[in-house]
Amino acid sequence: MERSPHFERALLLHEQGRSELAEKELRQHLASSPQDGIAHALLGITLLSQERRDEAEAAAKEAIGNAPDAAFTHYAMSRVLADRHRYAEAHSAIEQALQLEPTDADYHAMKSVILLNQRQWQSALDAAEAGLQFSPEHVECNNYRAMALVKLGRKSEAGQTIDSTLARSPEDSFSHANQGWTLLEGGRRQEAMMHFKESLRLDPTNDWARAGLVEALKAGNPVYAVMLRYFLWMAKLSDGARWGILIGGYFGNRLLAGVARSQPEWAPWILPVRILYITFALLTWLAAPLFNLMLFLHPLGKHALDQDQKSQARLVGSCIGLALVSLGLWLAQSREGPFLGSALVFGLLALPCSAIHTCSEGWPRSAMRSIALILGALGIGSLVIIIGLAPAKGSEREDLGMGLLGLFLLGSFLSQWAAIFLQSQQPRR
Image (cartoon, rainbow, N blue to C red; front, side, top):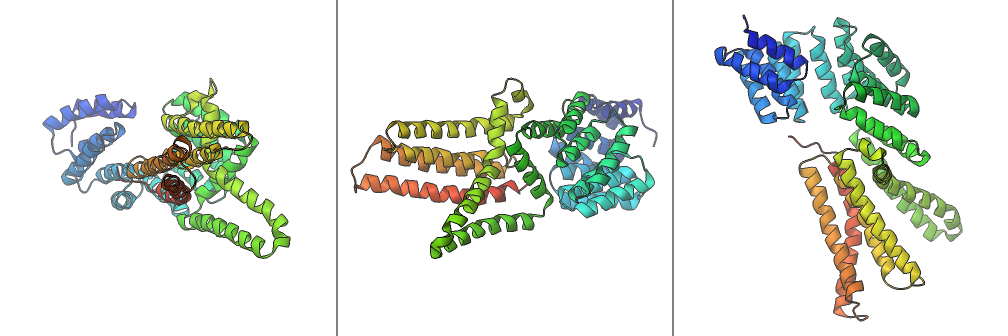
């Protein structure tokens, strides 16, 4: 099909990342060639880059309707569906594209990234390597191959892959970000920071590089460096394996508590292990927001945080601040009075508050926010009754206050399991 100058200009503008101008040219082209499936597919990708997902999916459907035998139309649909977290449908679409054009490395790269998002590391590696058979220097396939190798624990091979990719494409922002994360996985923080900074110099909108830079900055603290290694290790595991570790740790701690009660002579040896476990468990929740708070309070570090991280730092910082003030009041009263309870409430409230902005936008974040608000109402309500109203011992008011506090404590415990589930959910968008 002979295409108009509008289409050619749209293609050039799309490659330059000027999506709004590309959309305008494509619509002018489609006004005279409404059945051009390739143009509809390109329009869908252009709309997707503007986060106009409903319009992008409609354009991709129109593309397939007009050109069902064109692989590019199915590729465009796959990109739209993957961005909407509909990975099974996206996988079907890219398989259709590959049936029509099995030698296109772009399509193999798309299949690889879909599988990476589904945590199918070996299959993602296979897809990337399939694309490299047809285009050995393909940047995206090499990058996705490296990402899969890192997740499979083959960091040396991953580093070699990205080194060769950067040697060929030294101005590729994605490759620098990928190299940064690979180096960070290997504990080479300073080198990782160099690549994250270069990635952001080449593309200031690269959120993956910005997130890596934030983690590298925080990893300058030895405590957070240990936690980061744990976070990166857990990210490689399947959902079932992660749940197994978390549940195993909880019941292991309960088992040790039971042994300490039944065998008092062992208690002095068991207590340090339990303290270490509880401290580590708390750090898995609070390390990231607390170190985000430290960056937020730094005149330069705060610019590295995104809006979610800043909001998380404010929330957790407020809870910890109120807990510390309450603890100070309790100490000022010679360790007497009700303020130890308020320190406990605000300290525990930091846990569900820290999880809000680690959940994906949509229903998981809304659910976590609701849990935090309910717990806040229970905890603060109990404090108002116990501290503000100072009810008499054994009165109904005191029973109500203690009942609300009990519900708060139970809810704080259960909220952590709810948060683990909600953090694993990626809602369709």
